[in-house]
Amino acid sequence: MFTKIGFEAATTHLIAQNAGISVGGLYAHFPNKEEMFLQIIADRDKNAYEVMRSAIDTAVSKNMTPEETVEFLFSSFFSIYRRDIAFNLEVNKFARFNNQAREIHDYWQDHEADLLDEWLASVFTESNEDDLKAAVLIVALSAHEVFQYLYKNQGRVDEEKMLKQLIMMVKRFLIPRA
Image (cartoon, rainbow, N blue to C red):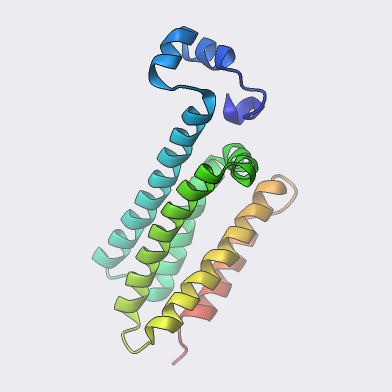
């Protein structure tokens, strides 16, 4: 319901009706729709973190090159966001006025950044730790902005082309040339 009609329009009555339970049954699990939405955000963000962790583990186990790993990571991560485009837009609106939603989102984004830091440090052992952290921040912010742009312009831009351009930019930025 949050994805379909938005947080504001989704009443507990509509949510319960679509879930096939009574409003009382809904309140047995959540005190209000805000708490329900916060739990959904936490679950979704944790899932995105798990996808990134799994993608890094897969890349390492398959001995992928850094170039292959960057492409694999971004393609894997973008598939999560593409699947939840409408929901992501609703979460972004909600997080603007709800500190707890912003804290949940920041918590999982920080964990994702830590995963990338670890991977980069394992690949580029000669690099300075502060440089790696700065690189992760720049890449994460760039990816976030590209994903936001794609959400807002769904159907009006070539998503695959934008993703390929983002991956190419990240490779050029992160991977030293011989």
